[in-house]
Image 1 (cartoon, helix red, strand yellow):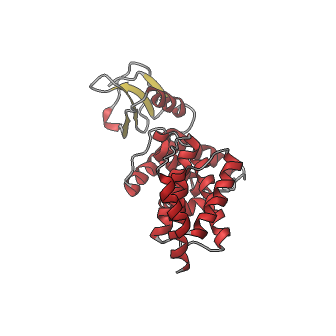
Image 2 (tube, rainbow, N blue to C red; image 1 turned 60 degrees about the vertical axis):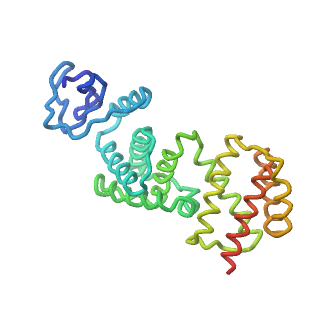
Image 3 (cartoon, one colour; image 1 turned 90 degrees about the horizontal axis):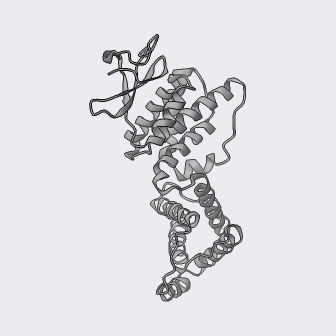
Length: 280
């Protein structure tokens, strides 16, 4: 391996045995080196071969702008998230998370911390990712001696969730906001507090998540055959359906979108289940 481009003292671009461009990292790997110099492969700690040219290019640019320690702690968080959640994360998270932690650390050192308005909802809707976010704060504290507030665990959790959803090109902030709004309508309508550990609540939130994604994308399809079944459900679960009508009005007024019969049907069923379970 020889150096094709120097990103910083600890990172460089080279080519692997197949001739593909890769980023190699290691302490002092490119220190006092120049393009064309051989790379001491014994000190290589990590090799990154990203699937898209755009992400590969953005990562190169990022590594020229921020200390490598921020990338390393992000890499540790991402690996922990993959192992803990058992989910594949979009490669772009290497860039977004590293950049976020670097910016957050700079703000923190200047005495500036941002409140996370969605923190409470992140804890409820994405508990597994939030736990990863809390673990991430430990990694950051060990590396930089920075004691972030829990708001930052929420921000990191959203980066992870966003990487999970990237293939669907969804705006996770908007999705979370819609989940928050709809669940609040249900809470206030029935004057209840959800049993957030119940499987019914989990199913309800999962349904709202996909509902919000479809609402944002506009990917909802009306099925005329649902009308008969909806009439049955409306009669059987009268209170739940009346709550859905409140939701329907809210969505129409705030998102200019009409709920389909299918969505009204499934929302009614999920609301009935989660309310019944909570009350029982």
